[in-house]
Amino acid sequence: MALVILAILVALFLVFMVWVNGQINHVDALSGADNTPGTTTLIVGSDSREGWDGDDGTEGARTDTIMVLHKPESGPVALISIPRDSYVSIPGHDKNKINAAFAFGGPQLLVETVEELTGLTMDHYMEIGLSGVEDMVDAVGGVELCYDEDVSDEKSHLEWEAGCHVADGETALAFSRMRYSDPLGDIGRAERQRQVVAAVAEEILSPSTVLNPTRLLPVTEATLGAFRVDENTGFTGLASIALDLRAGLGGEAVTGTPPITSLGYSVDGVGSTVLLTEEEPSAVLGGHRGGQL
Image 1 (tube, rainbow, N blue to C red):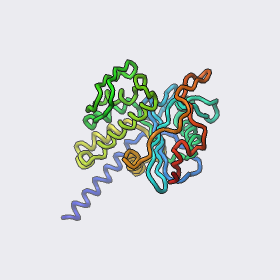
Image 2: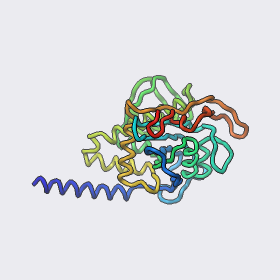
Image 3: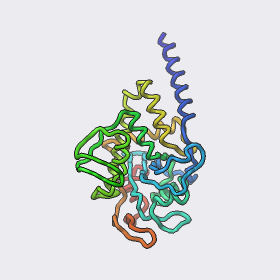
Image 4: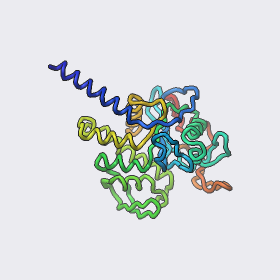
């Protein structure tokens, strides 16, 4: 009897794996550059969900969220947020804000730009349509978020009373996008974005979701519909990214932003930018490359 039950469970898992693979949205993103030590994933939050079914749809689109998830060969995982207004070199273009790379050349150019900035080859690419954040949060029944200031922000439409609250999808999206009412601007927004990612990931990977088919299937469908990944990532790749991300959101992880010289560096024709400190590429990850801290 035990063998029969085990066989049924294996069969169900295989069916689930095939179903997941069929639901994944792919996009050409990787540069094909030589591998670097460890495993690195570029996580991007795009302001567009167009093109999820084939048409790239990146013209004019920008990236509100750019995070580098790096699992070294040894040592803690790093999850580093790169401010979207960081003034960087973009291959084939003049220097500009890093989120312009996505508008100029889609995922491929953004990957190349981040690789040049960090000195790390991206092994995986995950792009989340920010409107899809609403679907994921609502699918898990809301997430608890904390911010210690009252906010009434016209641009993000965030209405927030200081403290911790269970947020629905619409509120979580506004929470992750708000910056004009935050004295830390992009830096504060990056911290809140990591908080939203952590809260959603915790709910998705919780036993109450993973072990409950009636909850797992709709949550998985909403999650897969919210993002797309590089051309080489399937079910096992997603599982690997999820485990790395969980570690990157844990208490032992290295988190933060690259060293910053100025949050208001003005450039003619570009506007106000974030000027990163001119150091070796490894400084973008706080020296955290291949397990070297």
